[in-house]
Image (cartoon, rainbow, N blue to C red; front, side, top):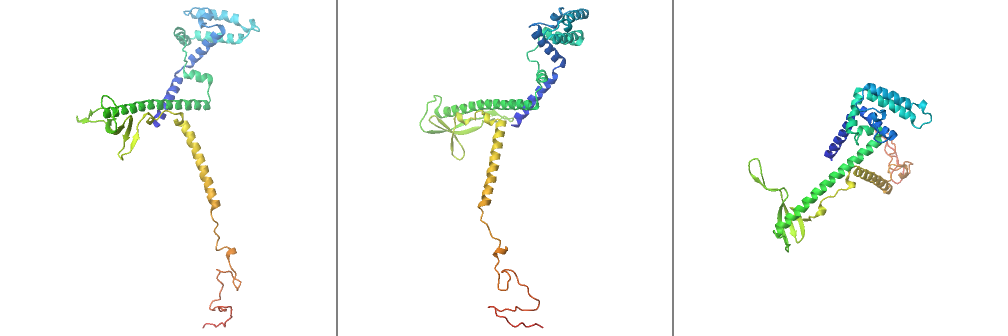
Length: 320
């Protein structure tokens, strides 16, 4: 999962770097080319609109610009639709062709054509997505990449399972691959063929104990249990195992689990038996002398009790 997040981060970083690589001047040329073709007709270029060749000198461009500006001036075309936009566009195009660097950039696209994909920076500058849109896009992108990785892993595991089943049957049935009755225990190499280590010793691949019973192939674990091996052993790709869906599912489960525990604690407190406090006044019994039971009656120092058992009074003798 960490490797996947790292790869997704690199992809986003590469996209952002590519967007900064686009030049602002190129974006302006892209917009002018598109607007000019929409307004004046498909295939119209800066040079054809000014009616000059692509090799025109600066003098020729200035002369053509003055002529065209007089034709498109809003004062001479009252009520004409989009005349103000066309006149302003003419001034921007003339400025680009008069500038050496600007004309060099336009000539590059004039000869090679404007690319269909104009860079992520161009589209970002035009549409200006907000933070929410960017987060949604990155979420869909990373979830899609994770699903793609799951699909590739599933196909790889599926091939491994099919290969292991074929090798187990081959070891149990022989080259003719005719099913035999009863169970046959075989060893299948899952780690490739024998290889040599650095010292030249031959090391066998990872061997796994299997049991073949008719068409069924089982994995035999050290405890002696048999586990059926078939194509269902490979885990298929699933949207529910992408990081966003898993996060939502785990959050919902934790919420309901906490809610159930809280309700269970409340129920336990309500059903718990009530224990009376022996020190409370309600549980005290009043004696003949008026003192409550469990409460020590005050005595004067040096005097014995003045009442015998049964309530008879006795003579008090002073100690000397």
